[in-house]
Length: 480
Image (cartoon, rainbow, N blue to C red; front, side, top):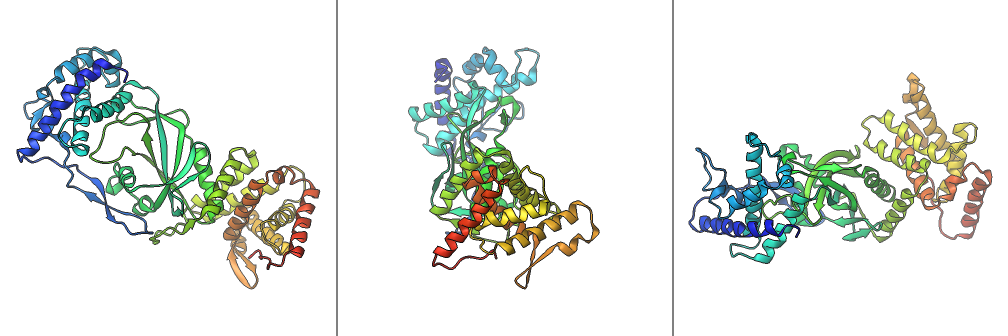
């Protein structure tokens, strides 16, 4: 607690507001409800949650309102014992006045009204929260804890938050997957699901994308917000850590080999609170961002893949490798993600091939298609792609399709399908498999990309596969 005076003025006002809420409810008078709180429409084990809307939760804040000729609320702010004294103290503080949008100019009627509303909110939000969570008998310790959270909002310029970013379509056996010191993947609890959806009105939701999540990326100590009350919403301070979030998704994509992404950014205030909504948890929706794969099957009612402990260990290894990777590797992973966001197949194949070339192209001159084919076959031998001639041929065909497109050749459609073992496959699909496999190998062994121009490195990879294949009694996997 930083302002003892503010607390001692606020506490009796909260206690009186809570008593007025209690009297109102016990008298049997109608309490208006929240307009559109989220609720579970359907929750089945193993399935994505489906959300509906709850119109039956009382909003105790609506018992109070500003003075005025046409006031409809049962109680005005000035009827709360201690409100006027609190308002006078808040008005006398330049920092509190600025927080609420008042410059101190006596002629600024709008600014003074905003200050009056904001001061009342400090009382009413905590009293309503108390009524929902503790009932009507005043609990000073609970009230003080909630006050400290609100005070933190009023007094801090940089407000720390934990990012909560739900992962679409991929689930995990473990409730918590620790990826690094400040990044994890954690199961979203039912209360947190409801809280993250609260600010999304029904007409704003992509219903499947919002509910198609069981776990979220949790990022601590990487983001702060500024939020003067007069601004209405949080404003992100500094650069938002998109790169870190995207690298988690890239690592998940490589480990799972299934379409994924994210659609929503939410956050948990750390040590402060911008008000409360009913019984909802403090996780708040921040903004929507369409960074989900265009190949997601929205008819699915369960996650495509549930990753086990081995796969989640891979994610941690891949993510940490990306954090210290060179520019070529970062570019390749980013192009893999960008390709998944593309609606146009021609753009997708270009992204995938840029990623492949970033990993295999090196810096030495030479015929590009040949270099990519030979080097790719050698690297992928370590992944278990044993027929190197076939792998090299696939890379050549994929790159030929890309070349037809970028050079504007009208007959590029003839290269769209790649023949293999009597079957035809989309070149984009083959390119994605190749890029994912290359990233998996080269992120786990950073020396490969640094030495890819060295023919000895390529020969060693082939020799390594030859030795392993002749000494193994297990059947060797093929490229297909």
